Amino acid sequence: MDTRGGGEETAKKSSYHHGHLREALLDAAHLLIAEHGPADFTLAEACRRAGVSTAAPYRHFADRSALIDALAGRGFTRLTERLRTARDRHEQGSVQSIVSMGQAYVAFAAAEPALFRLMFGRHRLPPPTEQAMTEGAGCFNVLLEAVVAWLGRTGGTPAEQLDIAVPLWTIVHGTSHLLIDHDFDNVAPGTDVDELVARATEAFLAGASAKGGK
Image (cartoon, rainbow, N blue to C red; front, side, top):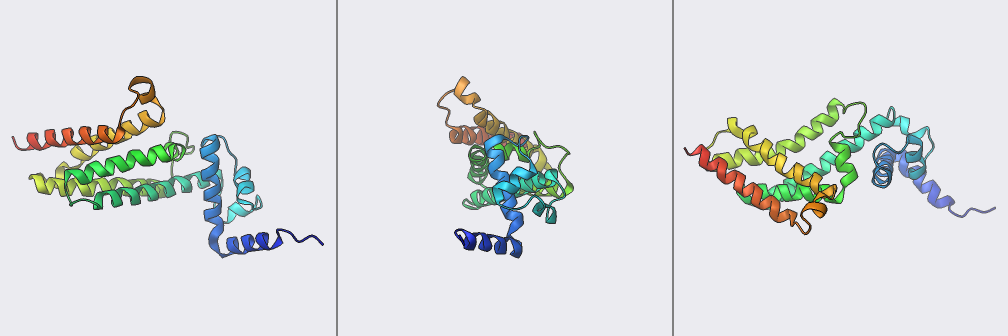
């Protein structure tokens, strides 16, 4: 009897039995959206890529939309970790801490363009669940914390945090889409996006600080 591959398959099933099935399906969906885009894969394809039966996902996901929602949530968790790491490399409340976060945001989009688009809902039907929205809000809160710290250093108040944070997010979110849609290649080839984020962020914060001092 030919038993080649049997040990590997048994190990895989055992691994899934012990709680790895959810991550395996998320990994498979992640690869599929990178290859085909968020709108062009089925739950059955994710099962085949993960090496499990088509009945397996229903232990963790009600349907394809739930799998996509969970993948978006995992994306926000990973982006949050990168933003926090970038922020914490610098002095709390410093301009550089905010610049570093912006650069990390754009770098994430560049590394994961399909996932980035999925996270922000361009291809998501039905709309994201409350859980996914909470994970997205947690990501934004990392920026809010940095802005509140910056306001504390510059004589501002926490009440101003959205007035500062939303434009900062707009800078890096817009830059991210211009980059992953290759618009810089067409309009301004050779653009250094790290330098662009740094200059735009520094200029905005300088202007906000000067305005607050009047």
